[in-house]
Image (cartoon, rainbow, N blue to C red):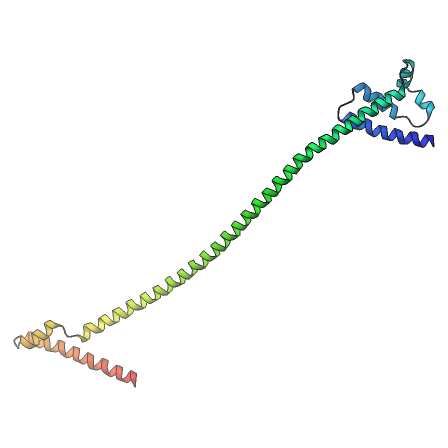
Length: 203
């Protein structure tokens, strides 16, 4: 029906006027006039009672021509909006490329960090190995010192020093000579005692 077509045309023109006003291509007066025209429904009587329409009719303005001019301006705005979107699409494409490059850099950094983590784990294992080796070497060192102390004491008690041999073989027999003999007797007794202990241990 004509009423339906008028309502549809009014809605379409309303959307176009809103787009044109948003992009700043209509003056304040043109925007107000176009909005007032769109505020009416399909009732011709209400449309004719509008002050703007009455003023336009009194001045002899062709409303159809005015509506055509508004539609032409809206189409121009639409084309410019499309061109703006195309220009922005290039920027968005560049931004998308930069984001991909950043993702690639982040992936590379993640791989490097994982490599560092693996290296740190290997270094940690090596440090633990060195700590265990150090502990083992300390134990061996203490054991060697203990053995050295015991062996040194054994050697001092069993070995006959050259001076004692010389004194027993060449010195005069007197009180001092008796001391040499007693010292030698101690070493012989210690040797026999140690030999008996070793024999009993072997048995």
